[in-house]
Each structure stands twice: as structure tokens, then as C-alpha cells.
Length: 261
Image 1 (cartoon, rainbow, N blue to C red):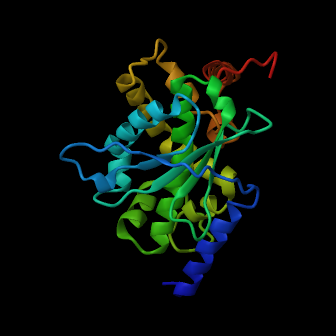
Image 2 (tube, rainbow, N blue to C red):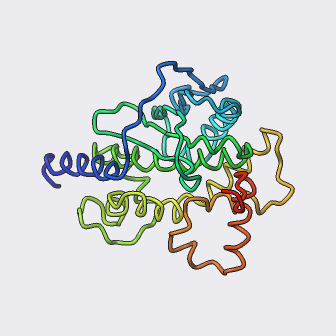
């Protein structure tokens, strides 16, 4: 077993590396706590989203999405009987629509900061949910990483269950989870595409059902789940026809007109 100071060093290294390309953002002082708990279910397992966004449809999307995430098999697997985590959600104005959202997390934070591009005002509820699901997966990876460094058995078991290749330079676990998480957005996107893609599709489909926005085309959820993952190896292996359908679906659901944007 590596000395404890090596684990601490790795933790600090990760938290600094994922911040190297992100700017600090002033957040709103007014905070509205948006949670969804279930009768008879341990509320400590709930994902807690503090919603400080001014986008008009965010609150209803967060309400239903929180419920779906807490009930999802993925959440139960990664957080069985464990306290979940808290996300502070707020909106910012970005120069481009290409970055729909981003997660900011620093070493002394007790929650994850999720900034939402105000261009999402034009997105459908389904597309907005897809964006939030993607960013929440980043939070999940960072949270599992942090708990694994603390030698939590469930976090270590979860990482081993991902079935990743044996390419871990840290030698803490015999797979490349830590190496990919440490590689910032690109590495984390690889992990999301390999490990969470099918779960993201399922979560989005479940969200659509309880949100009463069912898909006319069942492939919409599959297309939206690729949003933000277009640089991954899995996406590159898709046919040009598949990529074209995915891109057009993402643009349509996000309300982006390429002729004017």
C-alpha cells in the first residue's frame, strides 16, 4: 500500500488539474434548495441540487431529474446506503453555445459548482436534462475518485466493476480509472462514454416518462447522450450517417440554428 501522503498528493493534483482551464465565476447570493425525497427511502441517498439558476425551466427539470437519478440502478450501485453529494447550480453567459455547462470543484469545496450556459434557455426540457446528466456524471467520477482515495470499499469496488484496461500509472488500482480522471475533461469523457453511456440513455428515457415529454423517436435519447462526448473513441467509431443524425438531433433539441449562431 502506498504511503498516505502519496494519496493526498494525488487528490490535490486531480483537483488542481481539472481546474486549469476554468475561470472563477461570481455566483448569486440567493439560493433555492431544490430536492426530491421519497417516502420510505433514505433521504441521504438523494442527489441534492441547490438551484440558483434564473433559467425558467430549470427548476421543474431539476425536480424530476433528481427523482430519476436517486431511483436509478446506477445511483444505487455507486451510493448504496451512502450519503450522496450536493451540486450548486447557477447560470453564466458564455460567448459560445458549444459549451453548454461545466463543473468546477476545488480542494476546499464541500459541493460541486455546476455552471449552466444561458444559451440553454432555448433548449427543450429533454436537452436540458441531458446536459445536466452529463455534468452530473463528471461529479460522480470525481466523487468516486475522492472516496477511493479515502479507501472506501464501495468506491474501490465500483471502480473495479467498470472493467477498465490495466493502465494505471498510480498503481493504486490495477486499471486506468485514475489515469483517465487525472486527464481532465478528455479523460473523463472517455470514462463517461465507456462506463455511463447506456445508463445516461436510460436515465434520460425515464426522465422523459415522468416529465410527460415522451420521445416520438426513441433514438433521440441515444443521440442526446452523445452530447459532449464527440471526441471520444467510442463516438469516432460510429458511422458518418450516425454522427450526422446525432449532430442534427442535438442542435434541434438545444434550439441552435446554425444559420444564425
